[in-house]
Amino acid sequence: MMDLNFKYKDLIKFFEENLPFKPELAIILGSGLGEFAKSVNTKKSFSTSSLPGYPSSTIEGHAGKIHFSEYEGKKLILFEGRIHLYEGYKIYQCILPIFIAHKTGCKKILLTNAAGSVDFNFHPGDLMLINSFNGINIKKELTSLIGLAGVEEKNRILDFPSSSFNKKIKTAALNEMIELKEGVYWYSKGPSYETPAEIKMTRICGGDAAGMSTVHEAVFSSYLGMETSAISCITNYGAGISKNKLSHSDVTETAERVKEKFERLIKKVISSI
Ligand code: HPA
Image (cartoon, rainbow, N blue to C red; front, side):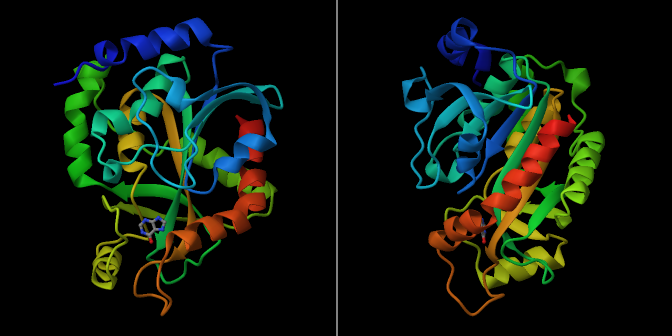
């Protein structure tokens, strides 16, 4: 099994030598939500293709940049674009942004993603605070990596989502008069969208939104002791809910439409930490 500190030693050294500041909050920007990085004051950006050992992004809407930015005096590390299992990468590669955030000394992380609705009350354009998730398989796979990231066995208690961070996000939404739904994020590997039968099964099993990311990141960052919360942008109806056929452009178009609301919420969250 892979020792992350050894595997990524060049990358860790790179950040040790080029770190503009120690970030307080990391944000992973999901599908079509990467533009947020443009709305804050960026001090230093790295293209992930220039980073030693960093996997290259293969998807439209995932730029592959890491920004060190500031907003209202708060220091941020922003990941524009993420690494998915369905791209053929291994799980130790998918959790690399979390590992980097941890190595830079960051103690808090907000994960964002695009997801399809499963709950009939959720509609494209809604924002959903994740209160739990299902990802049994990847959770199992991940546990073998935790120790190798330098985490002691005795700390293996999953604390996701962070109740204090979730509280701050709910307050921020309230203050901005943004409706924030809450629900269970249901992971599947993809890359194809679920079938109507799979969405139906997900609903019966208690899922509210379906997506192909976030769970492994949430597990890993929580185990690393980072305060972790996650927000889904509902970009489309899950398969079978609407008569229209799903496409990736639905995802990016809705994310574009929700951009202003999303930015407002995230900025309020940043101010409140
Ligand atoms: N299913 C899975 N992942 C997704 C979806 C979906 O409907 N929309 C955006 N990401």
